[in-house]
Length: 203
Image (cartoon, rainbow, N blue to C red; front, side, top):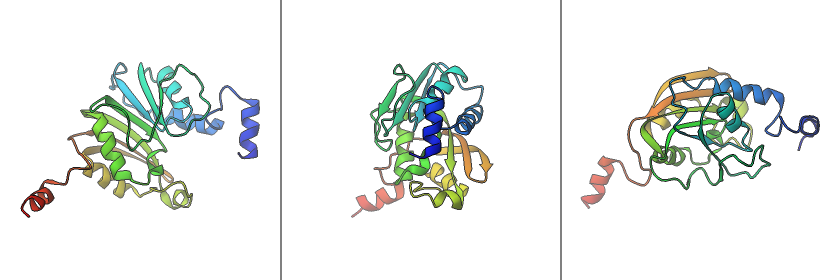
């Protein structure tokens, strides 16, 4: 761990378990983009929730009542009462159509298989459900070895479309993109497209 991070944790143990002060501001700015029309009583998935910091913001500042977080990194948690599931985001233990909303910040670019991941998000989301994903992008982020999928906006736009989603708004930033949209149809990664399926069945 970097020395500056150790310093912050030692001086601000309650508020900075999830990162430094600037990160906390970034999280709050991102969550403030969530539309007011989203029903705070419906289930929302906090993808890549880490230790739960973003879940607390979703609860305390955005007003969501049913927040479920997913992480594959068992960090120290802010609050043991949070509903955090330790799992692989590419294969989540939720039934189909479980969530109405999905939120993530700087998570999708860590996937080594972004299209299967988006299909998995499609599976657990209701038709008409909405999402807000903030994704690191640009050459600076591509140089960081754990950002396997720091793609330009047009490529993410295409992946969302192919995975059954419609992107309605793109928030642009030099090193981060925000995608707001909805699920318009079911899309199963394991089922070939209709035209390919026809070709296979004809042989």
